Image (cartoon, rainbow, N blue to C red):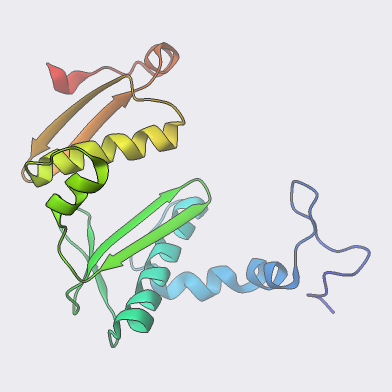
Length: 178
């Protein structure tokens, strides 16, 4: 049938690997399955999948592991997704083709984090500056060379430059340091 991946003319990915049966089903019906999780207009297919998969995973995890009935996610004015009817901390992150969701029902323990990372976090700001740099370095695949960190209305912004090529090619400036 249509979703039998053992056929001679089975659909292949760009890298030449044949889709498995679930991959064929997902390619056909995945977007329709995720549409109920798109509560805003998303302009690109990439952003659609990042946004909807993150919310789908968050809702499923909240329901299954934290017994949240009818988990609803709303977006705060600052853009952060939060559960409307559950006291859970939520973080959704994505990079390339990976979507990760973290949930916890306990507040952050900065003393424990300080011990784990062997550095003292005197405030949430200290921790978030460290964590944002750590995540940026991981995503860039190299150490962050230059950055500015600014707190604005209880939000954190980071400007990162990693190489001279990045600065030259994209005219990136470290404007927050001024």
